[in-house]
Image 1: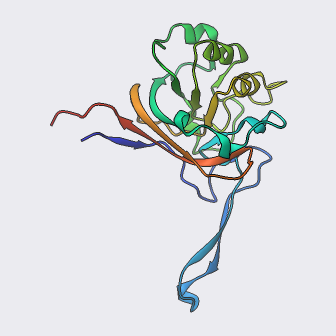
Image 2: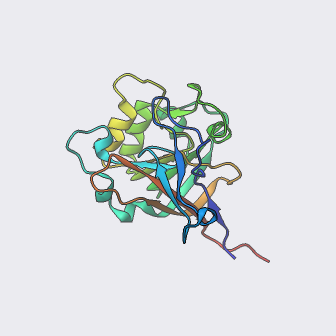
Image 3: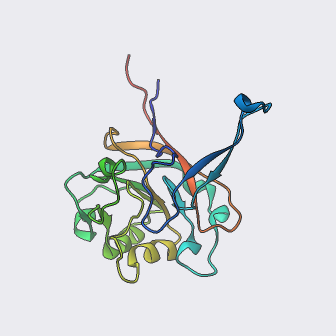
Length: 213
């Protein structure tokens, strides 16, 4: 049977959030134990909380929102590279990877271990020239295992802008711990929020080949 990997962060009040973003809260509205007929909760969450997809309008004024992203990009074959020793994913690093036939690429780094900790500016990221390299190679989706694909407070945000201007979908906040490098089927399902700059997503990887029993 083909194995599924749920590479989404669990939505909970204690989860890691980006500095300056509102914390996640899940508050009770109705409870059976208090005499209500059902349990209902109020969820407060940012568009870039946890595992999420960036829409073009996140950095490009007037660009499409999350509900306009081509679904054909969000589902399909993807190649995962575990790169635990790379802090800076630049053109030189990418040039050593086998990207033949790849249109969706995922980077597993030391970041996955950081998702359960407080925010640190010392996470692995993709550089501006690395982003341009991915565009030149025809990559349509790129995912990484931290809340941002870009170096913390990078002036001008060249990584985001380069990718989004080229129509490349950015998936951030993936938990890729325990997932081996290789080829998978990606299923990335962001919430359909009208005109939003991003949306939380449930993301799965499915093995392409069944394991022998």
